[in-house]
Image (cartoon, rainbow, N blue to C red; front, side, top):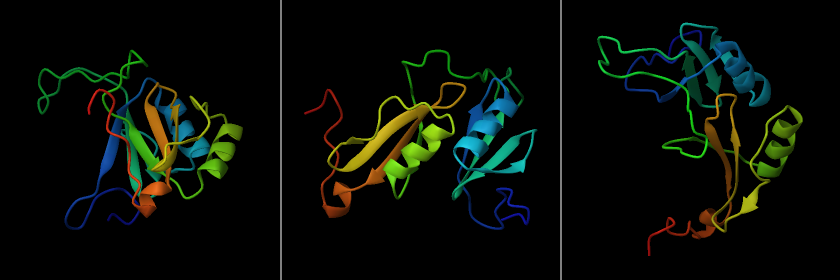
Amino acid sequence: MHAEGFPAPDSGLLLTHFLTVADVARSRAFYTDVLGGEVVLEENPCTVRLANGWIIMNPGGGPTPDKPDVTLRPPTDPSTVSSFLNLRVADIEATHREWSAKGAEFLTPPIDRGAELRCYLRDPDGYLIEVGQATGMLRGIYADPPAGTS
């Protein structure tokens, strides 16, 4: 990895997550001030190290030569989601209290789902973030089948 913490592996690969955001400074503040990330690069693209991963944020825009016919934009409908961040924590109750005190708005408090304790929040652009703590799955209790399946 690059000496300054930038996600540039010397070999193999590193996983990063790219978010198209409306306001880079606002999103950068959320991922650092609320979730505790560390700024690696302020802009172009904004890169924040979050635990053992990285969030890369840039404004949206139209197609580029390497992605013709693709336009990037933040989510427009908070009720429809095709992917989300999944953050695993050691103590979900403490995390919920800490992040709530810093301004995070959770959809619900942590709920015991049998396999895990879980709750969700949104970032400033409306991206959904799951926060979970493994409980039952550590003892062989796994998630229920997805809704609509048997």
